[in-house]
Length: 466
Image 1 (tube, rainbow, N blue to C red):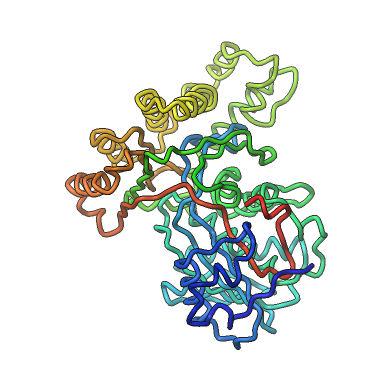
Image 2 (image 1 turned 60 degrees about the vertical axis):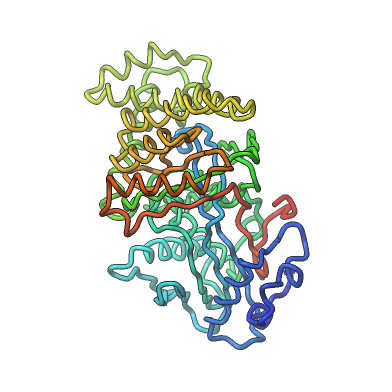
């Protein structure tokens, strides 16, 4: 497999800020000066010689516009990539271990290939071990040691998918530079959409094609986050379904408006005991389908497939669910999915295309209300951020991510976006002063998908599309 060669010298040079001209030679890879400077800093943190070959990665966060807990349940979601990202410079070495250096925090951890173990008190190492163990189980031990120096701009545990971004960063680094001895070509060359499904399985522990899963490390979700990170396009919200990952629509965000994001300061963790709360919506979705399948002529895999079948009847489903002791919660879980997929998402997209902002806002408000009342995954901080944004004139505002903390997006008039951001932050600080040491408020935009360049043993198909 051939790849455009990059060395640490290329990245370390004082003029690396102009690397967009020197290295970003195709439309598939476009480096801004800011990103080139980040790569330069990371390359300087590497201990290898200038001549050592390197791979670079830029892995954005994701914003879920609509589609709360719909992806794993067989429905679509509307997403985009954030302009904030995790950047990494990756090299190889001769020892049988993975080295991960967090340049921003000044920490580094070695993960031996023969027995990778998480580090107590550093929950992020759980994700690294999960990816490394599964790749070794599928494809054998890497022939080369891999060193990753990374740094993230993303607010940690904010609902912007920093954990999924780490999963993708680790997986691409190992596949791109580790040289797995037993990897089939179909896993060394993958479409972005297919790799998004694979990355989602690495995190959730699900099977992927013929590759058997495990217990995973994150929530029992789908591959929405990974798809947004890997497949987004500049200036647009993209509509995807996930069985398999497939784009089914797109809508351009008008240039007259801006996206503003507030990270609430309520940590939205997904590991350890916190997984139980996140996974409740997933368990209820599976329970709905299980109860329906007991009396259905043909078994469905998820709620989306269940609703699409010609034999499906909502009244019959309600009767079935009422026979269960958790019937009311199961019905609300179904109704949230059904309304989000069949009413909210198509209605909001149509309103966005037409520039009918009052209608757009009503659809978004209903989505947030269902998340609070039927999913039960909101906290006072996220509900109040939405309320404050709407009171300040946002066309629409919604919490996003798995819930129980995290972030809220708002779409506002572009001319007043900076002023809105300041007002939003001030109003939130009045109600939640203790959150302000962690909370962040910033202007964002729908951005490009993950960038990978210099990989030696992995590539994406049809890369020019991104």
